[in-house]
Length: 123
Image (cartoon, rainbow, N blue to C red; front, side, top):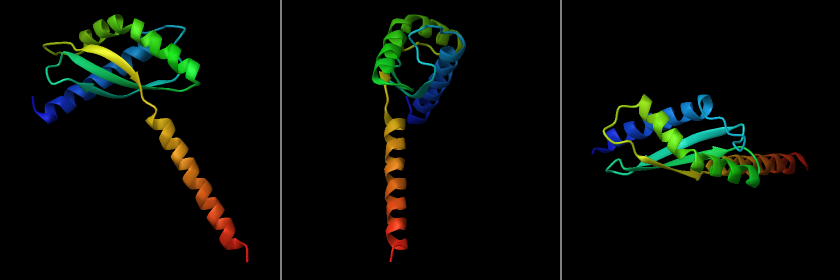
């Protein structure tokens, strides 16, 4: 399978999984804000890793991941209804902290810039 086709499959799955999480899944363990960051599908379309970002503390993240894992069969069936693939990959959910790391890095850059500006202003 070409890389371009894999990218399209991954994007389609990411979009559809996000829709299912917002509209069809109601589990009290899920945090209020969950984003599907990316989907990486194996070349044979049998497995897919779904990277999700969860807003909250570590406990909320763990509970949300457990809820997603236990609901993976339901999510898989719901996604299958909305996509036209020969094989529907088995979904495995993993936490992705890249958004938090990026926000932390931007905060540190802002602090450094503010500190440098105040150092220049002081004669």
